[in-house]
Image (cartoon, rainbow, N blue to C red; front, top):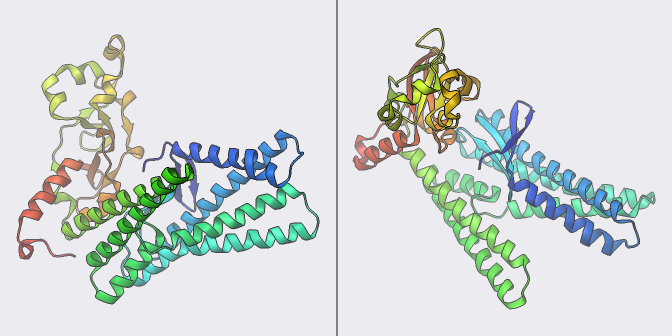
Length: 383
């Protein structure tokens, strides 16, 4: 899940938000302002309900962020590299670059999120009681009660032993500890995730068809997401297991064609054959061996034709600070979480700052196909 925009960094961890969060935010805020709050405490002015609904929705997403931050912080303490956190339609996702080193670390990382949600739920419940005891505003008490309930629901739901939920990772940690095989443990957790997802799909559709309850469609959507996500997690685990021991240098396209930052966009696009062969080019500065960014043919093509003779590649490139990079000796399995579709997400392979190669999803697919065709005994050993 890609971030549409970023909010900054917390404890050195990037925080991103997908556009779909706006939809959920609007549903929560409007549901509270137009439903629960006026039903529980009528006869207030509508701006009061609207303000209370917006504030409660903001605090809820802060709680959700705290849940994900708990995963990320505990992961880093166990030596697991964390790319970022992305909040989206159905919650949040902490993108980790590497796997947990052992079942105990997996257990702690997976359990941190639900534990924080449980603590927050208890804290909001206590706050609700205190506010009620001192006679605080009724809408404030109602809002904290809702936050207590939703955090407790979040803790319980995420603890269900089905991937990709946190409970699925807890199940994987247990199966890994019991059997000693991480891949088989992942397959067990993803099988449970798909089964649970299909149960939610069937239950949601049944509720909608027989009771006309539109919440059933939301339940079915959540179930379908679990089915798809569990399948993706299982495939990713199998790929990571397959490429264990493979270095980035064994997958990259070495000696990629580079272009200088002073080159005009017109000159870059002048050779249609080259533009067709390569969708992205490392961009170099004064030193032709040291990249300063990445330019895509698609991005250069967006420059209006009259401006192309006067626009340089350096003006339209993605700077190196925003470009994914890797080392030749880095494990390919650790690079996989950073690979995304699109030419702008190509990974530049740098050896002491000098361009050594470039990695695209097609390069990884080629390596995976080659390894899959080999007998197991011929595959690289992990480590």
